[in-house]
Length: 183
Image (cartoon, rainbow, N blue to C red; front, side, top):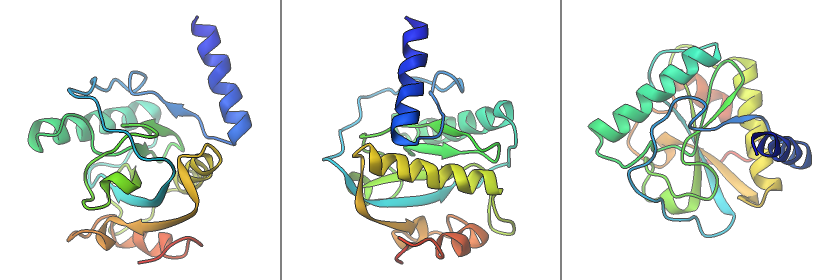
């Protein structure tokens, strides 16, 4: 059974040009305390965040930071799960949060019409690694080809939809140059 799952994931990655996405169980995440509402078809927005925590550059440190973000969201914010759909580490890997097709929290009123991607770390005074930026862009392309994100999507920083400095000045300056960005 495990081999079949691995083969199916590899097929999906090849078919949709998707990056490897580490499942929540692979990074040691807790199960959600609720079932998420489903997103209504391909979403029109991708909201970029940063966790505003420590940086990470290996699967073990990124997994630890993802667990810290989830604990903060569940214990301090009172949410039933981590707020993001995906997290991206400077190890170039994507970490599953709520995953594709599930409504997250963190960016009202965009929650039910967007996918939230959070870079692990604080990007106020430094930019994420090239491998993290490439992984995020690959994830977006994967979402478009998989039918989760509209082909005419718009990228926004969290600060464009809420009163926050997120995703940090350096990361925000980068995403402003992405072709689908609109403030």
